[in-house]
Amino acid sequence: MSDAGARKRARGGGGAARRAERTSVVVETAKFIERNIPNFEVLTEEALQIIEHNAETVLEEIGVNFVNNPGALKRWADAGADIDGERVRIPRGLARELCKTAPSQFTQHARNPERNVVIGGKNLVLAPVYGPPFVRDNEGGRRYATMEDFRKFVKLGQMSKWLHHSGGTVCEPTDIPVNKRHLDMLHAHMTLSDKPFMGSVTEPSRAQDSVDMCEILFGKDFVQNNTVMTSLININSPLTFDDVMMGSLEVYAANNQACIVSPFIVGGAMAPVSVAGTLTQVLAEVLAGIAYSQLIRKGAPVIFGAFVTSIDMNSGAPTFGTPEAAHITYGAGQLARRLNLPYRSAGSFCGSKLPDAQAAYETANTLNMGLQAGVNFMLHACGWLEGGLVSSFEKFVMDADQLGALHHFAKGVSIDANGQAMDAIREVGPGGHYLGCAHTQANFKSAFWRSELLDYKPFETWSEEGARDTATLAAARVKKLLDTYVQPQMDPAIAEGLAGYVANKKASMSDAFS
Image (cartoon, rainbow, N blue to C red; front, top):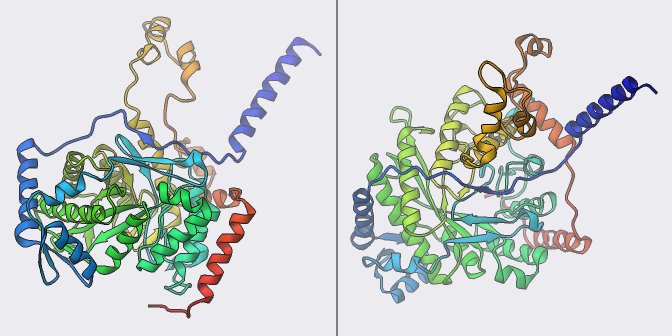
């Protein structure tokens, strides 16, 4: 064979190898984000001290309600709080002192140790949408969610590189009885994904089921000595702690499992319309909730949560991606860091009914705000639509793709010799170009973040390929990810144990849909 023929064959072989690399199925999960950028802070020291003082005043003079929970009232009384019926007034400084035993960061273990996440510090862990009763896709439109939809979302999460966490109720499977669906949801997370996941909080016994299933998956001793679940405990804002959520918190804290203690804030409805007033209420509620977790078990892992939105005063509908929500999210991050606690907020929030321009604007505002606010655990990071009523398959992959941009932005600016690129500037000189220089050749694969979804092709090529918009491209990506999904392996004995637990639990109770 001639030298020219050999060179041609080598070039052809290299191209084929590169094409094979691009089209092969590789299930890769990026490590959780470790920020190398500063947090953005909006509150001065004076403002922080005023809000902290006012929050303590709320706890001491107004108090909070722990409803239908005599055990909680007794624990607070024993700790030194003033009890009046279900009203708990907490002396100034007591809640803050109790919060000091909560860890500043913790590791949530996955069944695949390579997927473990560290929540706290400068880290950001990304988890998918949580809670919607409806789903939407291009083919079926908007409809009630089913268990099959739930499984598809878990599979998409497993296949999403930039998503670190499998989440919890990625949609509410309405075709399964209310008192049994938590078993199927947990089983799906445990078997279809090897990423960390969340437990059930809709009833204390379901929280206990979550712990019991984790003991099958991880081993009882491991669960008691390590955190394997992070679960969402919403406060019934304003200033009310209901027995269902607190009962679930009690189960998780007693078993060393993490809880996000999160006020549910719709400014103008469940909190004041002003930023400082809302932050005061948020801090008071979080202090009371986290302090209570430490009364259950000192050192129980917790996260300072803040779900924040405002309200459209004409329609009463929640609004997202607004400057006021940004101010609150940034400010709450500062307050969380002063308590030395991990922080949860932000997400792919939007009020749009479709994965359209409104959804993109609002989501981009909120995702970037979360990164720069110092958020450590971002629930709803992908898939959220219609104010949280809908989990969208197309928006799930659109958002999950954009999470890659957060990873790259968080790296900050490298100032090492390669980052300074002085050799490249010398090599090219005046009037040249950098396309073929040694520095570009050495760095072009990793220099720029590149979307795996968005279209950068010339107009003619785009038109010839069907002039597809982003939602159409996303629908194709959903299909590709589901078609190439590979279920992570599991010890057959563990799989049998989980399936048996679910079957026995279901058989022990009648169906209930309320």
